[in-house]
Amino acid sequence: MVRDELQAASDELDAAAESTEGETSERLAGQSEALAKLATAERGPDQGRLDRHMNILRELSEEAGDASEHVDRALEHVTEYREGVGGI
Image (cartoon, rainbow, N blue to C red; front, side, top):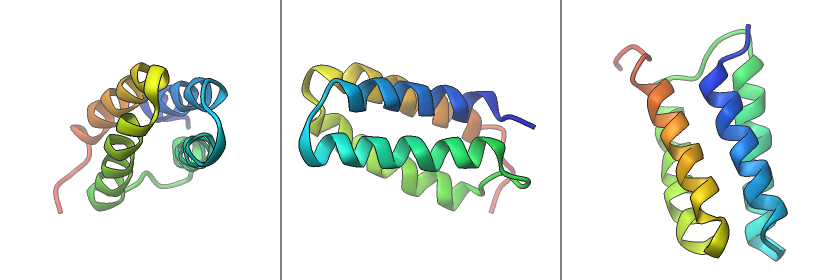
């Protein structure tokens, strides 16, 4: 089962990573990989894990310069997915 919103977020972060350099690019690529794994994992992530990713994406959006639009769209996808996750 693929969680489409998380896969879309991963794709946006791949595009952002390609548009940046250095540590920011590496961090974006790492988040992309993590979300891609969550998109296809047997069990979906809980709200706490999603919150951690969302906080990192907010931080990366400030660092990403011109690629921040991709990061913001990724954050929107994660937020959309999170709305369907049960409470803590």
